[in-house]
Length: 271
Image 1 (spheres, one colour):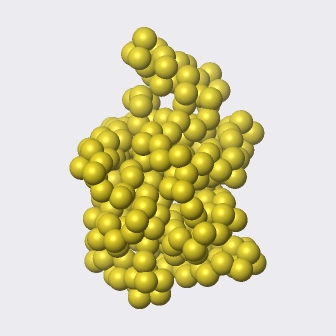
Image 2 (image 1 turned 90 degrees about the vertical axis):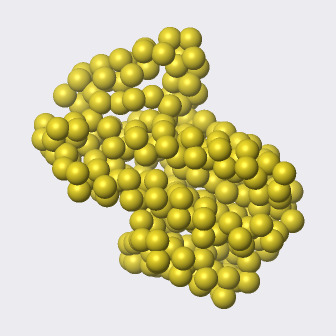
């Protein structure tokens, strides 16, 4: 995408973390914003911060897993802004538990937000995006969309799915003005560990998990800048953080090693 000024960027999960940082980064490059989150207070705080830049901002309380609400969201953006140039499907949740420990309701919650949220966003906003001379779809997968990780079965299932969905959609749209990018972050200092559902043995490691992210993970600001740079460059795949890059490389030459290494980290650091 050659220019950002006066483009309209739609960002889900923008009440905190990467979503909030993306709002700041896009506004700094001249974008107007349609911000969505299920957390009304966090969403209002993001909007308050970004409005100081002078860019136009609308806020939308949205559950991305709700098809009807996402359809209405797209209509609201069209009414408020008249267009959409960038769609970032960022909203995400997780359950920390083995498959045996988590309920099917837990699994469905993760699938609803992480996978259906991406599908709903792409399906509902694609007609708006297709009208533009240049447009971008950014789908947040994960490093856990590259490797299977214990206690993250539902999360990995959705992030692998987002990766495949994004790659297929990129090919479908290759001859149009819409580019699709799949993003694979490693550890980012967001609220996802705090807001996760912990079940079984994972309950006792919750505080250690949260502390590990606070101490070791990349800042959302750095991640957001890399993602926006990726949009500018028209990238189709972006690995954010060194551990994501190393994992991707090792997965190619020694497929079993990354998963075994992460299992060892969980046992030694979080166990």
